[in-house]
Image (cartoon, rainbow, N blue to C red):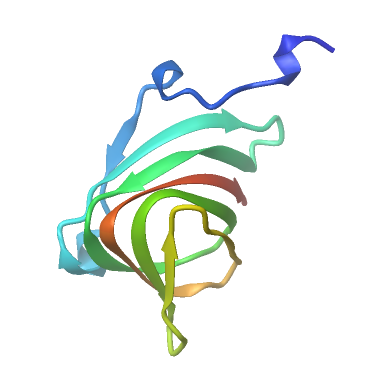
Length: 117
């Protein structure tokens, strides 16, 4: 096996994508997203990269499974009818299929992610 089986995440190697949540789902602020999609697995259903959000709050519903590792910032994730979960640098968690709730970026947050459709 050679170098083709090992890949470092490097923001310099990828052109970032800029986006925002659906305006109808925004609850507060004007959150803006930057995503560096680093890898799409051969199956076309698994993705990994780095995502960043500026402050704001929006409602979200997950149809996918996602592993997250917070690199910087502070966010509060609240399942509908559930307990708010504050996440910050060093925290890792999974959002499972069917999650519905809010993401509030309190302080610009950057995370590494792995998504499985």
